[in-house]
Image 1 (tube, rainbow, N blue to C red):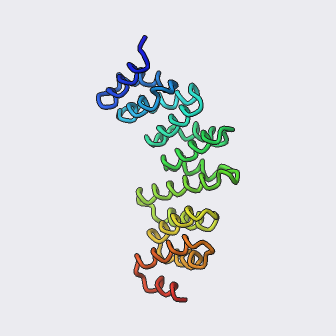
Image 2: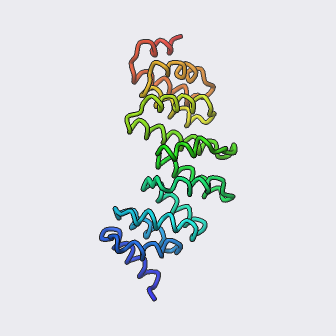
Image 3: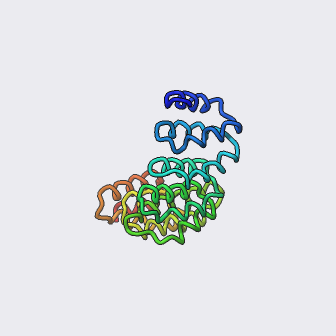
Length: 219
């Protein structure tokens, strides 16, 4: 039987030389806290659909930090087939697992992932996590040539969230996708009680250099 050091060495080697044939062996290590991080990295480097199958299967077999790591790996690989599986974990009693699932859906950023995030009823403690995931979905819309729905989503997230980090990101996204409709968001941000948000809004206005927006700085 291989020692922990031996498993670690083998996994690290497979990170650069792994193939479809390595997936089974690496997947068997995903519950071993000593080598699981290296095994996940090795799996992430293998461009084969069997990796996604193995990661989805592993979710029900591992616990704690190892489960969080597997969920994160699913997100990194943007496995659209995992959306329903991740949905079942968004209300997990373990906050780390629930938030990892929400974040992974955002990283996947597909239509199905977006629908899951929109439909979920996030408790207040996870509202910012959900908002950040939806911001990633908006980014994915932009990447896929869909700036109009992205602009609508950025604006909604700005208006529906109190977290300054969410508002700031949403403001930048709105300005990039639909500057005209984002004017009201800039005006709101410049009047915010948050110095950070006001500063970010002012910097965004200066960066854009639009006359109408600049006027808001002096209104």
